Length: 368
Image (cartoon, rainbow, N blue to C red; front, top):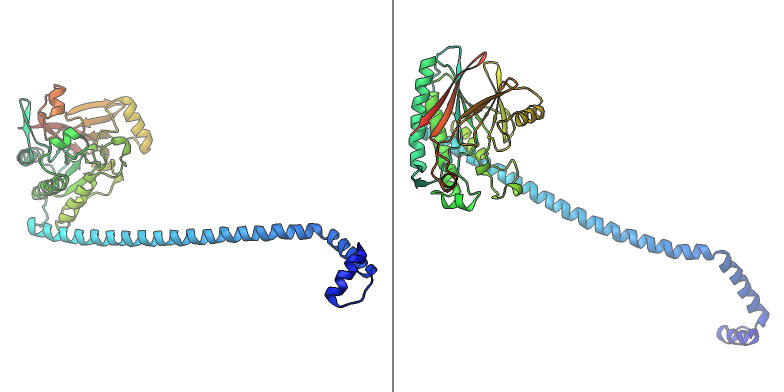
């Protein structure tokens, strides 16, 4: 009862108040409490919301710190890679000056045509010996020397002024399949070193016989880093590294020029005597009207001709005035794949004589 409450309160506080005092105070408090009940309840929710937002803020701060650390680490690694590449580039230039110490005096020559020299599917590192053929890195070097001599003859026959060296991919054999790995004599590193040395030497020798040497490069499927095609990034091809090495080692030679005309690592466009030629490896582009039409739409222009490799045999077709020229391979045939498929063809590379009207003639150079 309120009398009991008054007695307890008086004992606790030392006061002498009647029960009406405490009853009236309680009713006043009750009215105030009821009037502010929503505010008091919302304050509890508000406090909880503030605590939740503080937790989210702390989480965001931790995420930001982790992202900043990761970003700084990435920048550091990229800076280290760029520094190492700069150092490697300088080292290659020094090696190039020593290994290819040639006469850099300009060649005085004027004519109405240039040569396009295809270097397709060298497959450096591949080694086989069967009834269909034989191939290894030493044979590759001999065939390149033979090819060079034929180019000099063609150049003299037509009084050609400049030469465009088109690296059309698969300069190394790579390790994209188990059968490929088993057929390799050299590992990937040695393949890159040999291919870079062979191609550099080839271009340097050409520079002694022609006014200007222009180098254009696209990557092939055998130089991809990841064995499975569906898992491989299109632009991660070791052919791109080889062309970079060739560029560094020939920078001191004034009439060798590496063209920066690539749309990506698999496509480049060169201009020879006013005509445009598209270079590709051939693993994404095929010698048929549909494929050529897709290529033309993709690049947004109609080239005079498309040059490719990949299929290891020379060929020529024309689709709606766009010429498609396919170069051969330095390796011929005789490996497990060509033996099982009964594919027999000679080692072959293609040379084009080009004037301001386009292709004057095509040489399919057989190599033994």
